Image (cartoon, rainbow over all chains, first blue to last red):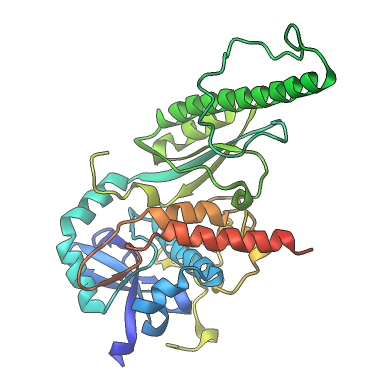
Length: 272
Length: 105
C-alpha cells in the first residue's frame, strides 16, 4: 500500500509561521494537501500514486502538456496560497520523495538552507516585468539582437540611397538593406531602453534576475520580447515598483508587470 | 481517492481567523490548450481579493518560474525532475503543441 504512494512536495514554511490550523484543498493529481513537520520546518506535501509521480512516470510525463499544465497549476495554487500569508520556500516543480519519513529526513538535512531561504524572502514577494518592442517592421528578426553593436547609432533614419547607386535592382537592394538596418537599430534602441527599465526596477528590489525572452509563439504576441525579468521586492516597496513601471517613458516599448508571485526565482542558496 | 469529492473543501488553503470569501479555488481539471497556452485563464488568477488581481497568469510566465525556480533537493530519497532539462523538454512540448494549433484551422 505505502509502496504505491510517494510524496509530492510543494513548499517549505517555518513551523512557527505555519498558520495554526488549515485545511488545504486539492493539490497535484487531485490529491489532498497535508503537512509534514520536522522541528522548525514544515513541508506541504501530497501523497500521490507512484504510478503517476514515481521514478519513470515523472520523467515520461514531462512532455505531456496536459500533465505539465495541471501539475504546474496545482503546484502554484498551493504555493501561492501559502505565500499570501507567510514566508514560503517553494520547491522546484516535480520534487517527489519516497515517503513522509524521507520528507522529514530532507527537512533535517536541509534545515539551514531552508532557514536562509525563508529569511531571505520574508516580507518580500516576486514581481515580473516583460517588455516588448512595438512598431517593429515585420521583417525584424525575432531572435536575440546580437549583431547590433556595430551599427552607427547616430545615423538618422533615412531613405536616401547612397551616392552612385544606379539601376532599380541596386536601389531595391539598398532599400531592403536600409529597412533591415533600421529594424536592427530599433531593436537595439529598445533593448537599451529595456535595460534602463530593468535597472530602474531593480533599484526598488532586493534582488533581480533575468529570464531568456519568451518565444513569441508561447508569449502569444508577435513582437520581440526585449526584457523578461523578475524582482524580489519588499512588500513595503511594491507600490513604488509598480509606479516606476507605470511611469517609465518609452514609446517603443510595451511594459507588462506581473505579480506578486511567490518568490520562486529567489530560492537559490547563494550570495548572488 | 481519500474522501468523497463532494465533501471536498473548496480548494482553498483556509486559515483560522482569516476569512477570504472571495477566493474560491477550483478543482484541477483538464483545460484546453487554447485556453492555457499563451495568456488567458482568468479563473486561474485565483483571487478576487488580491494576488495577481485582475491579471491573467500566462502559463509561460508560470513555467519560467516553476521549471527553473524553487529549491532543488537532491539525495537518495528524492525522485526529482531536477536532473532533467525541464525547460528544454517542456518548451519542446509547448512549441510543438502551439505549432499544431496554429496549423489547424
